[in-house]
Length: 168
Length: 150
Image (cartoon, rainbow over all chains, first blue to last red; front, top):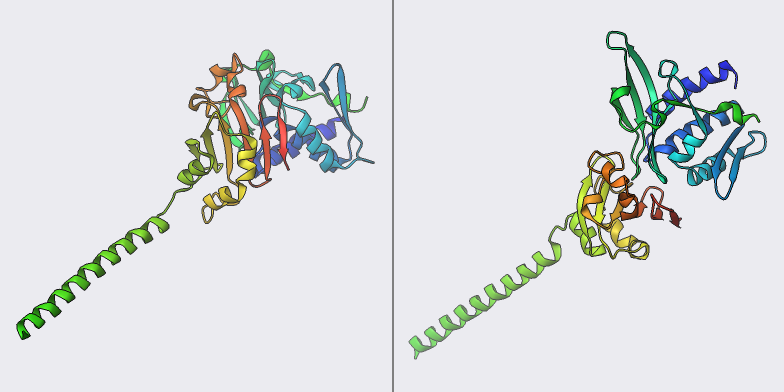
């Protein structure tokens, strides 16, 4: 994905997560933002999950129905699958639409979608505002905390969708 | 005789009044029983024969605790459950989250719930989720979910 499309994704996700007004699971909110953005920009999406080997869910904007693909992806993928389809990034480069993940056990995790990041140079801390769905599903909740205060962050770093795999 | 007749009429009136008051009171009690306000919580508890241990007013969710409630209990009683929320703010999008134990009745990221993720007990205890807005019913939503409805 080009830098232009990436910047547009960050902007799109920021509006998407803060205006989403229905009950939703945490991973589903992240997946919905990604797929709705890709559909809007006519970009492909490739998401993998493990089921006796890696299985790919592929969205071709030229031929596939975005709503159907989104429904399928939300049904098949959870927070741990989001981890499999993202890569770690430095806290300093995290932007809206990037993710802060948690893995509590081999089958259960949590997804937080970054809305904004503010660096506090005095303490060298990052104040993060994020939105999240939940389980049971909720209307996205806005939360604020220092990144260092968030417990059980997977890999200790925020993550970004692995956009590179979408075109392969 | 006149006195006796007069006393008889009086007695008859008193008896009629007593019977009337009695019938009125019985009727009043009967009316009260049929029109008594039943709260949505009581209504759901009576319908599912389960306990509502927590209400999330923001997300219009009842946390229900039961070891017996099955997907069919919700599916087969949907019209009755809909009546429980009639003319309430919950009506368009009420939700039921069924757990097997009250201590697990909560959201997965809550401080009091997180310790239960170590052995996956929270996920295993969360047995049913019904959402009225999408009319979806899911068995084991957090652990091998199975879509029952739609």
